[in-house]
Image (cartoon, rainbow, N blue to C red; front, top):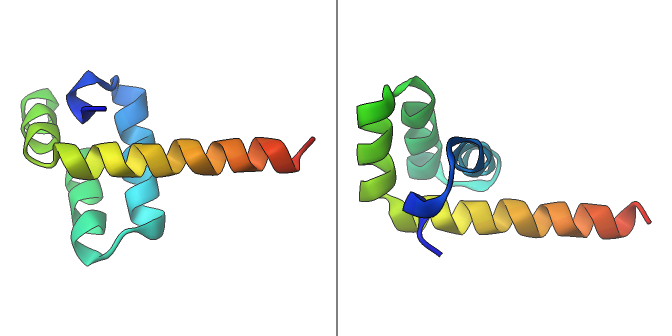
Length: 71
């Protein structure tokens, strides 16, 4: 999966996951994402595609685990 294919809401979830679980670098990328305009958001996601994709997968995995626990 490429992060470029994710919509803004999905990218935002990935950024939130970066803040929760990421190291210092990932947390700073998430903070930059929050304040970026649309042009710079695209540049961030393009430059750090693997990071956004990784943390979106982690977000989805955590979501599935939480759904399984609530049953």
